[in-house]
Image 1: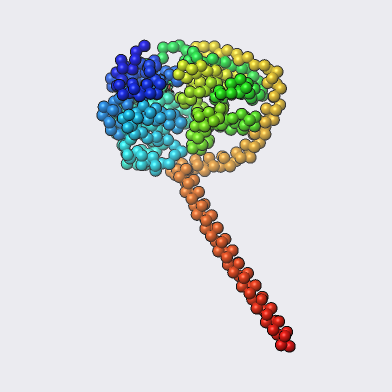
Image 2: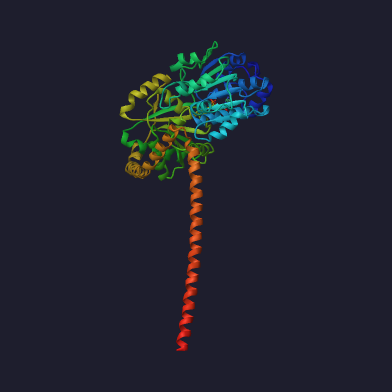
Length: 477
Ligand code: AMP
């Protein structure tokens, strides 16, 4: 294996890697960095957790340090959390050169972002929707001179899933120069390869991890066959077991919907497991706060939808549990890739019902490996079955009572977006208005109180005077 200097990396970056505990390049770095440094476009398909981010961050920083200007590099990524994670790697590795970065994601204040963009940061890391909004609404910044366009989790950006980025990408691609270096990275590139080749025009260098198996060897991949109704009991049993045996372990649980995510979180909290959730119906600040609490091990269990399945680098996750069997093998690959990262060991356990067996077969086909059964004492699971199912029902009822407000809030936010308003800015404005109104109300009440007191005092005085007059009159008669 080569070292960083033989790949053409500058000494200051090698030093900076050392400071981060990175001494040898990983495969994706070894293969993709030289062509990037040569100025070629690059498509890298490597397992999640294999050091993909540094494979593009390092060459970009090297080129930037030779001719620093802003905006030099634009990175697009599908989720807000990933944008923060990538920006962090740029910031840490680029510290010696005084790198200025800027994160442009939805759910945060647009005016502050516009101001930051106008200051010409070296690197912009963005989710497509919000960046496209800025391009449409502002002329205070330009990405016309960028040297690098990077699409991280490129296949997700290009596929038409639940969030369709196509329109936003069109806006962004029209705003970047044709002469640029384009880098595309993902753990699962193959599906959209042709489209990707269209974006990377400049003789793209294509590199794919040699291994047949698309998941890492350090990952112990297991399944549990369970009837649908017993799934939650298995989950509670597993969590209890891991908590008893390894109280320092962190566990990620993936489920299919935001509602399920919420219900499972409430259930786990009922069983006193330190659980927190992450899904797209949560406010952005809450999402970041919850992720930070999980990363710092304040909470050991994170229940998430697939918003957290890609790319998130949380070194301490030992177990991934799939509460539902993913419908697509690549979603499975991304989910289980949250553990066994950077050479560490990890376990993944997928709960499989009788209806999901064909899904397991297609996962096994794709990862070129067989999932093994995870041994569980069924008796122990059945003991808690009723208690768990009652807990679920209670949580469902509790959630239903709040669901209405939640949906209403979401619809309101959607409507605002359609009207071209930023829901968060509007919410802030509304809160400020409410504060002013409440202060006015309090002021009015205070005045009325004072008036009433005065009136009361005057009445008392009058009564007293009348009483004195009456006494005087009685005396004179
Ligand atoms: P990524 O695949 O970019 O999400 O990276 C996963 C983790 O690997 C991150 O925590 C990186 O800091 C770490 N990493 C990146 N490059 C290396 C390397 N050459 N040696 C060891 N760890 C690395």
